[in-house]
Length: 319
Ligand code: MEV
Image (cartoon, rainbow, N blue to C red; front, top):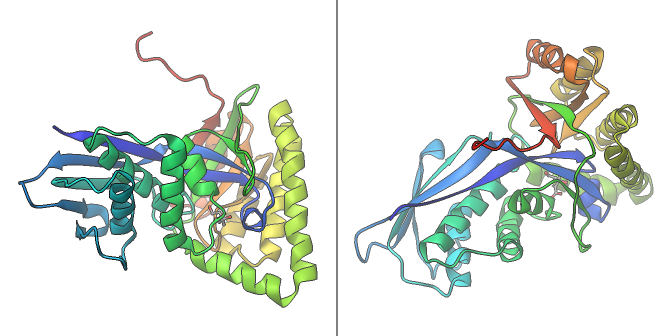
């Protein structure tokens, strides 16, 4: 029997990097891009294999290898151990439309889809809390010192207010908000940017600590603006957040250009989203200007743009 599972990408609306230091942040799942895992039985005694054609990998999972150097193998091992090391003969194929290194949580989404499909194959689906913990373990391999925001928003598949070691708050908005997302085409390593921000912070804790605190304060104001639909204020906060991220040295020429382009084309505000120095930007757009903003962003060098409508009523295929 074939099993399949998937997980969405994500964008960070406000608060990346500061979230690693315990400040709040806001994240939204982005279901237009997804990682999927399909599992089919393989010949008896063959064990668990993972095929990831997108990245040209074919891997065999050795349950007792204590030093896996690959995040896919590690994710599979963790899932199998959590499920009581069942003896399984399975071939799992992973596919993902989430750009790797794009700031969209590709690593967490792939881990979540992979672990989910293994649990389905042994007929013991994970509850979200358990899966979230397991994906977080793999995130540590990807990112070193992750806050946990990526795995949480991706596993829950809900917009969240997130703060490390605090209760996660899923939220809804009163009326839909339109975002334009643009990918710079430049993959970047979150491990590196998080590490560089840490070095900066250690070099001058007063100065950089104050920038992180300003980001934290801005997120708290942003939560209210988001819930009351104050789009002008929310946009302004996003742009301020971008300026503060620039001071943390994690913007880049193309990201600054895309943020400025979105604003000149009529966005309420825009910022880089995710680890930075590449990856993507997110702009809050008046709905009637979203197409124009997308076109301007592509002209300015974005390799791809998407619309994300937060709070859109789900379409029911039966009606
Ligand atoms: C990455 O999506 C968000 C960062 O804040 C890292 C993290 O929170 O783990 C840059």
